[in-house]
Picture 1 (cartoon, rainbow, N blue to C red):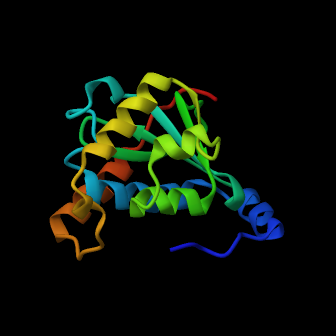
Picture 2: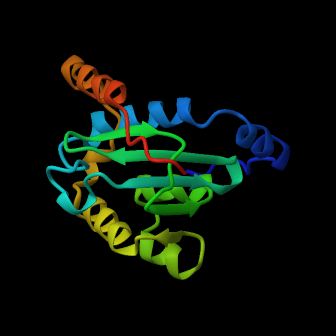
Length: 159
């Protein structure tokens, strides 16, 4: 599945909008779908780290703080790791129609900063059962837990 290319004016508009609200929505989705895996308890080396997902063509820079219990959206901080790709490439990664190594070596996926953290995240996602990415109705408790994490928030260090 491929998305139509995001027009540059739309990407520029999205880049000018606040990035925190879409980061909160994405963090809730990650926590509901992958909360048992993508957290500081399971990945101690990632705990208290900030990861930026940069969707280049959409103008989005979503910041996530890895807490012991899961991920929380954050803003105004310097990321430890930035992962950049187009919306279509991120979609292909999630759908598992492309692998991160192929995208990385073709320079369609770029990691900047703490590359050990990037490899940890990549290897963790690669090890997941493909069924983990299938859409399903979440349990209410999982949604409430994910929303609670967003209220706890991320770090307060300056960018």
